[in-house]
Image (cartoon, rainbow, N blue to C red; front, side, top):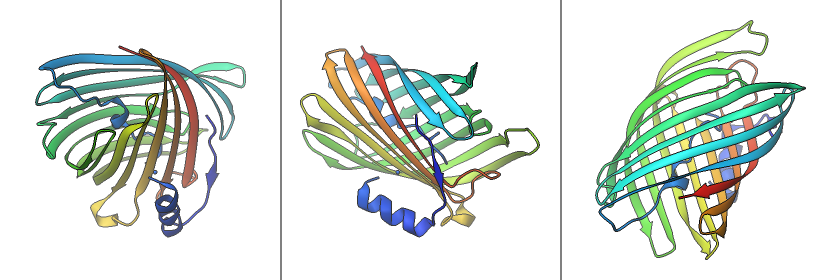
Length: 261
């Protein structure tokens, strides 16, 4: 994983994203990479993966990454559980750096307008986020559906509680906020063996709507065999109100071998 920070303006960043594609920090979960379409009455599926990232922020980090997901899908509804943990080696010391668990339910998933409910818990010690918990709901609207591609927009509200602490533990910040959450996501097949899944989130307090967290997650998935994939991921985040002295723009590049069932 490669992480860097730069100062920018919300307007310039928004224009750049419109030009190059869709992007608060990369803790937003790209649930669209785990959705499938089925015609059977019910289906259980999932997978797990492992990969290697190299990052540079306040220290040199070697990261071993693992993830897992499980889905239960009926003709009408969808239930999804995602989890991830990252093990790190930081300047010779092994630490457990970050992880999350995400639960989501989509009701009447085949409708053009479908309600979603979600709960999430996570942490990222490398960035100083000791804990984040959120719960919310949204309405998902399907506006493109073809044989090879699907696109959705969703909007809703969530309550978010998070605790941040700087590296030397001299500063601590805890806040509970009501936020709007709006996203646009696209998924589909480019070729027979190449899939894409992209999602962008705009999350903001209602009283500071134009000071958002803006995150984009792009994934390319190369099918090696029926049950084996190579995944390349690019995540970028702009935060107009970062905690402490963190950078307002962070990006991440990573890759992973994934086994599906």
